[in-house]
Image (cartoon, rainbow, N blue to C red; front, top):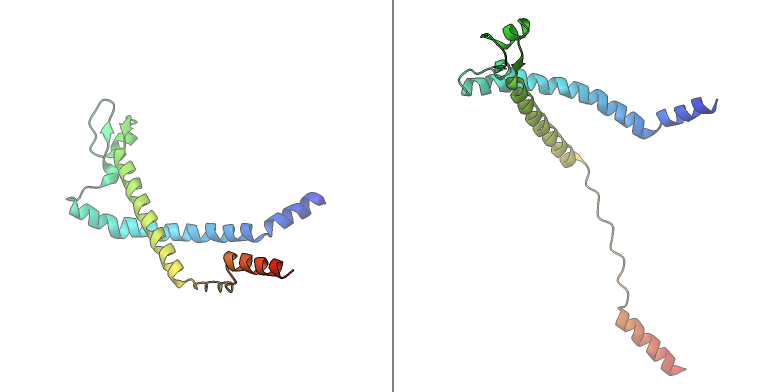
Length: 139
């Protein structure tokens, strides 16, 4: 019985629930960013680079000539698909930038905490020592 209650305590902690919500929202956000990259940005980038499709860039490491990466893979040829790597790097940069903007916006919306009031200023160390000296002189 101890194991089940221990697990229940762990699962109901705020950190685990926050993490679960973050994972779910992250998955949904990932779909939005993927659509942004594939459907909005990559066509613009492709247009500006003369219609290059990064995902189809490859180097054939074996024999034969193939027009597309799909044809080379279908034939079982050894290929270095560097275009997919370029696409993943672009995806990462865009995702990182989107997350940066989202966090920046959330920080702006976050209620700024008011600074704690300063402690009232008391006498300086010299003033306290002078008081002690004067009290000792009176005795």
